[in-house]
Image (cartoon, rainbow, N blue to C red; front, side):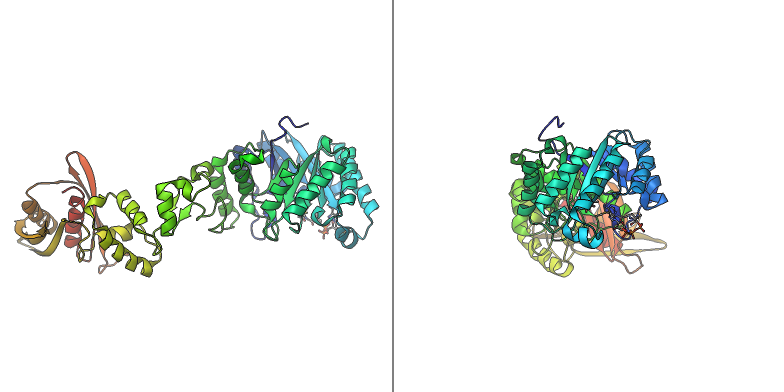
Amino acid sequence: MLHDPNRIYVFDTTLRDGEQVPGSQLTTPEKLIIAEALEALGVDVIEAGFPISSPGDFNSVVEISKLVKTPTVCALTRAVKGDIDSAVAALKHAKHPRIHTGIGASDTHIKYKFNSTREAIIERAVEAVKYAKSFVEDIEFYAEDAGRADNEYLARMIEAVIAAGATVVNIPDTNGYCLPEQYGAKIRFLKENVKNIDKAIISVHCHNDLGLATANSIAGLQNGARQAECTINGIGERAGNTSLEEVVMILKTHPSIGLHTHINTKQLYPLSTMVSRMMRMPVQPNKAIVGKNAFAHSSGIHQDGVLKHRENYEIMNPEDVGIDQSEIILTARSGRHALKHHLERLGYTIDRIDLDQVYQRFLELADAKKELKDDDLLQLMGDETEQSFKNGLAINSLQVTTGDQQVPNAVVKLSYNGVEHEATATGNGPVSAAIKAIESIIGETIEIKEFNIHSIHGGSDDVSKVDMRVIHEDKSYMGYGFSTDIVRASANAYLDALNKFI
Ligand SMILES: CC(=O)SCCNC(=O)CCNC(=O)[C@H](O)C(C)(C)COP(=O)(O)OP(=O)(O)OC[C@H]1O[C@@H](n2cnc3c(N)ncnc32)[C@H](O)[C@@H]1OP(=O)(O)O
Ligand SMILES: CC(C)C(=O)C(=O)O
């Protein structure tokens, strides 16, 4: 039945089990967008809904069936004829329809949910599979709460439903109870004790109540299961389901397991973001693979290690999951290598910078601010009271006079290579006067290509940020300046650019 015995079929249930999360219900158009993205991701099966549950869910299964071309479209039912009839109707347009029917298999469910007996439940299971099979060829059977079910009984049930026509047998750890070793052993037991097991694919469907959903799913796959049921971001009933991105990336990162999927992993992050937004379920920052911090390094030793050789602290390539690159987050735990990396990225030549001096000021700011962004660094470098550059240009004083009926005039005192120089110049405005005075000290005219003044928070008493692009020997250099005085901010930005090449 399986062409490639090492291929894992990925069954996505984001739109069914994932959508059981309170507050995360989706409209049909939203489900269609996600279904299309799941198809592009390369999932093998999309569980589109539980058609008997509501007219809206029925309609979603109909529309997804019409839309999706390659993956199997699956609809969930209880072991109840009415549910199966509804699923058959909803799947009418599916190119590859599957009915997913089943019933509880643990003694707890048999006794307290159904007030029934083991034998009677097997009969209901078989009857449901046969009924579904009379409409659709591809039938998946779920033995609910199989994680807590007696293995001998489970094996009898599975053998009976395969004989009745089930093509896939799902062994859910519905309550997230099992340990990986137990769950793996359960799958192995079924592989070894169900006589007709080679006529069906074993599927794993694990919940995360103890945080073991992914570990259990992998244990199941390593012991013979060939379909993994999961959701994007691991969303689902209670603590959620196995997360699709985790299973897929575990198999890709550990080729020694010898199993693979047909998932286009570069779509994982974009899809995670889409599902999180549409389902109003934020992804926790430390979530494996797709969390905001999954490829972000914030402590100095790690940052140094990653900058020297990414694989020192990364076992996956962020690009493989659709994230552009790892991030080096600047915090008070960062070291000089990380600071240097960002300064270089912002156009500073490290040889020209007094890195130790800048680092001490950086630490003080990082202690106060927690995380430093580009603007914080630029402000740090452009701080008019500090000398960030070795032998650089620094303004010692700047006097400007301007007003109606008066030619703007600037007097600049500049320290250059440790020597103070003074110059006076006029211009058509106070900024041009200040720039001309600086030019007369350095003895060169440097072309300014771009010049922008922004206020940081708004308000007339705000700090202004100036960014300026200058050209020197056909190369562009950016300079940034900050001050409550826009002339001083402009002069600072000009010197910041000049310090990168003078
Ligand atoms: C483990 C899982 O995630 S299973 C999927 C869970 N998803 C959902 O439940 C969402 C969709 N569900 C629904 O819309 C509704 O619960 C419906 C339409 C299925 C049923 O609604 P109601 O008829 O009002 O029944 P209600 O939900 O209150 O109770 C469930 C009934 O189904 C029975 N039942 C539960 N599972 C199964 C099963 N697999 N096979 C047969 N009967 C079942 C219960 O024993 C109970 O029957 P009872 O009335 O004889 O005691
Ligand atoms: C319906 C089944 C597969 C299920 O969701 C579970 O048992 O958790």
